[in-house]
Amino acid sequence: MITMRIVLSNRWIEKIPSYNALMTSIAFRLVQSKCKSCAYSKMKTHYDTLEVSPNATQSEIKSAYYKLSMLYHPDRNKSEFANRKFQNISQAYDVLNNYQTRKRYDRSIMVKQNIQENIPKTTYVYASVYKSKIDPTEKDKRFNFDEWTRQHYGETLHRKKKEKFTKASVTTSENENDKESIILYIAILSLIIYFVLKFISTVDYDVPRKTKKHDEV
Image (cartoon, rainbow, N blue to C red):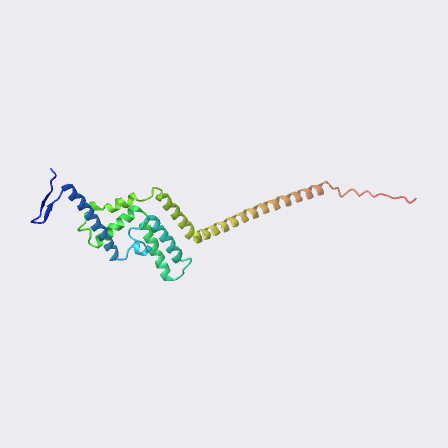
């Protein structure tokens, strides 16, 4: 039986049990969210590398990765710092661009900050809430973006491979053409020799040539 008693003298309230559970859940989520933010603020994370908030959406993470990778890509920036920066950016994106790896990464951060001792593993409500907010088409968008990234930044490697393949193809084609030309020359030469020999065999050198006599009128 749900009851509520108010004792003014002692200033305490025996609240409704269901209300207690609801308020406890809300308070816990607020504390959990606060602790999560604190955990990220005490150490450098992949979120810091991509310069986004821990609560950033997948689209925001992709946009940040695109912007930073364009800035620090080795093809655009030859410095050692840019090279290390690009490696860190790529590593961060590989972890955060996928829901499952991002979820595990978030948990590992909380473990390192000794927060998981006070927050049971079964209470990671934020992960399911975050997952429900993901656009159903996000997977296809991520694939398209990743494909574009590979094509864009792999252009140099792809071009070199294409040039190597083209050069090999041209060399092979030239060799084949040379072989065909040699065969053709041999065939023509053989025909010429054949007709010359045939002509020689039909000429009788023992018979004098006939000459025409022109009578003068």
